[in-house]
View (cartoon, chains in turn brown, green, yellow):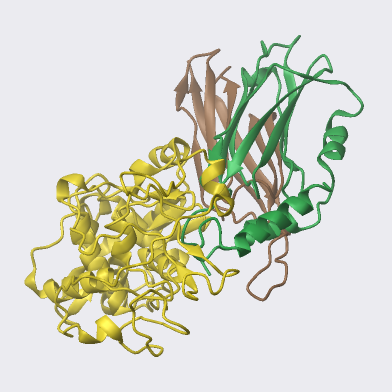
Length: 106
Length: 158
Length: 343
């Protein structure tokens, strides 16, 4: 499991726009870079990140080799009700990881 | 892109003559830039926007003009939009000019986002122009571009 | 003291003797080999102006250029320049290093010591300052998990003896390297972690520069973040500190540079496009954008030495620990920043 750091406010007022920050441990090997033996290292990147609220997609990103190692992303969502945000990263070599965070909306 | 090659070579020639941080320059970013591009920036933009006209405006692109290290460049894109059901941003895509591949990131959002603004960290293989294009819910496309000068860190590995 | 003076080929700087590989030569051979600090005048380096056509980075960045007629006589920027294509120029030197080097430079007084953080671009500073954006925190979190995990069923975790790191480890990294009585030598934090593993956890040492050891070291050092570097007043460390200072000031490598030539004498100036920091290791292990990952001070020193065209220290080399002991004393009372972010 790759280490992730997810920042979501624990509480928010209904209608608030909350900022979410996500960071995940991943080399994002571009597939364009030679290794020590001079051969190109095979591509190993995260290709897609999805954030869902109670199962419904609220934000999605397609990633490419131009995303830095240990991908970092911030985006916003409007707080409507209390629930669970899920964060899924998918990528090369079957990479597939989901983390969740609860948000309390008052 | 065809002009990427001569640029790279001239930069290499400069490096060989011992310019920029002469202390053990790792040529990795330059090598990356020298790789054949998978697609031109124009083609990638057309794959994103089709034949629709792309107008400058509404999009703000924030990145440092002088980059300390091209491995991680913080970039913020925001789009002026009320972000309601009737009028919102559907997609934002970032394109580079000189990386081996023109796409940087494409995000999909909707009225739920509240704001059309994202921050991420990207790789820039060389000094180049970055373009952001946003698609709004009325099917129109807006864009902004910004230049970044990429410098090399001193005392690199190997 | 072994000398890392890999001088292959012609003399590098005017006035320097031609030495054999790995052999002390010229000025160096005359230095007493007692580990004490010697700072005799160094051979006068060749001062050269960087032709504008060779300095695109400086021009591109809009920063000042050298003007030979500068009345102050001060060199505003520093760019070691390899005259690879200009052999025969400058007396056939392989390298000419454009430095305004005073013969004897003083140590930086405590009140003038500055972290490399201060010279970074605002974006890089912001990356370090926000724990939700600092990628080094990924390793710190890994370290927290390792701290609590026993290496085997019948042996304690780090937490089993030391308790919560927030209390037990606060201030520890600020005091390292420390003298290890059992091995009778100075030990850095990573060495301490591995010694603990062997002696108290019955486990194999973790690989130097491996993710687990970096994570644990970063987690422990993070507990001292915000505390002043506080080298122990332990006289048993004095020989290592003196050796470290001698290494810091010794010219080494094919360019004939020393650590001090950049970090004592020319900090704040530029090497290519990068601002030369004072070289205080306050944030290790740190996330270097160039590495796209976390690394130790040892790795950074190896990068420096490669840049100087000197033979780098091996991982865990006692000389590297001696240098670290001196550097930490030289950095006090700056604050620990682990995990720092640097370009």
